[in-house]
Image (cartoon, rainbow, N blue to C red; front, side):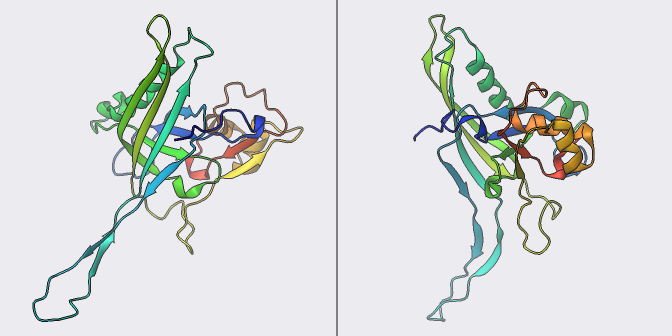
Length: 241
């Protein structure tokens, strides 16, 4: 598979991210607080999304044409995504090791869920700009990491990870009531005078929601917001602050 681009489109390139959340408490279908936003160094070159419909067919001995199949329901979506990690230009870095560990932790129960007596691994949301078809709340059923390059001290500096995500069905909140389509995220191009606080106020009516924008875009320094950068603005139901 061809690797995604890391910097070919300049600063305006929208990065894919994987928001890793605490599982909810009780019977809620909304993810809990965010644990970490995993930002992709290289955007995926390919995604595989699958959805199945279940039909039941009852054999008939007499009817020549056979009975009509009976629709039993639709299965949640599944998605396979490949993540390429490479710090070969920094042979002393342990970034690849830490990033793989954070992905592997998606298959481990969180401490908070154990304390709440509802043991569960994290819930995740993959997002990539306005690509709403691939955006849904999910759990990670498997993580496969292949290390392909190591430093002189044996630390991996290149790896390919394959994630299998399974949708966690949600209620109609976050959907368009007329079309049933998932609410698409907006993408905003930064202009002179923009700040995360001003964008949060305009979009959500709360300046303190800037942290959600920063997390969704992997921004470590909120004071550095270059003009022309494209920012993903999360759906309002995912905003906290």
